[in-house]
Image 1: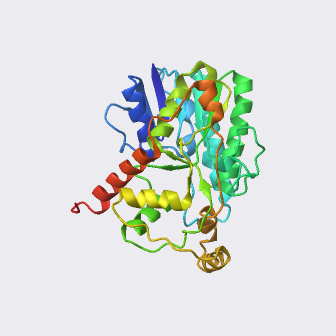
Image 2: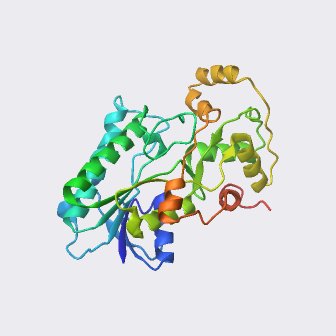
Image 3: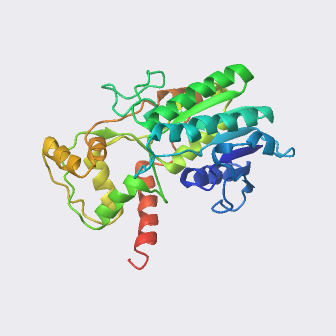
Length: 322
């Protein structure tokens, strides 16, 4: 068996490649630059942005059983474009369709697309999101992921390709960046955080749990044509998560209470209101479908995932500490 992984040199892509190789599956990594793939991956460098000309460039000798499409334009912390949605669509919709069509033309039977909970929305509808809930996506990233899902479903009907869509929430693990890394910095430095009163429950997924689920979806016959939510088995309140993460870092969690209204007002002044909202509003996913339909459970606990993340963080940012 051989599986093509797009974005194989990225945070999630490397984890997917490790999981595939551990399962004795051959891996071809589709990347734009020749660096970052793990040992054992056959690298295919396609330098064109957004998979332009991929169908023509597909090697005649490359035969794959499935594609796991990880590559994407993710959140940009300092967006420079005056039309962010158009930029997200170029990669996440048009680019996704190009690789799916190229794979279908090459005879690839299954296409596993890594979407996002944000394809549904930013705030849960009073309960965990279910796979068949209607989308109320608002930000450009989420809108582009939802549009990609719909375009792939239509392509699957047209070509007979087996489309599988996987929606993770926040992904963490060794090598994590963006807001999760900022939280690690704050906890490691003992910075007091005004989050002690948050009652928000946030689904998350350890990167190796996500990778394990993606491999499962690429192989399982019952995954064909389905959408699945993937999370860690335990969903924590924000203060519980912060205390557990601080414990893994061997640091105290200095949490205190601040009225949410005041905190949002302060965050608005520095352009961080969206980040604060994520820490005070619940966002959970219902994962019953993948558990019952594919008999999948995450192989790693939250404690294991956070421990591995903390070990990586200490080795990377405090290499001389004990």
